[in-house]
Image (tube, rainbow, N blue to C red; front, top):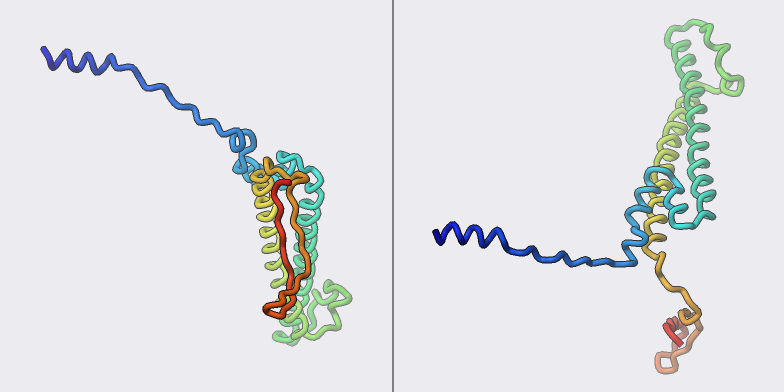
Length: 183
């Protein structure tokens, strides 16, 4: 009987109230949300942070690397086609009907030059993809850092002074940095 009453008494215990821990800085503007928005759509994190002036910079950088990618891709395809046609003409010792389809600026180039240019454009394609990914990542990092620094106070009482200095004891010249916080 005591055992049953003990179970009943345990079931009647009052739950502990949850402690609400509300941090106004992180709850109001979470950096993770800004980074996620910027990772999904470039510039959306900057808009979320109310730094709309950065959006044209983001799209300009990504657009430039995208344009360079397509420029290199088109040149790669043209030089690859020209190289294949000239290679087949040399191996088969015949005049190819495809020679007239080679772009006029590539027709006089020798086979080795076409192979070199083809490889260079292929390398440049890889670099432009890498630059696009790095710029997209910088966009995400910028949004996250901006969200972290959203509540950072930059008032008149915060200053950094750089002044030239001379040490008489060491007889050397140098720079001194003076950070002033408060008045």
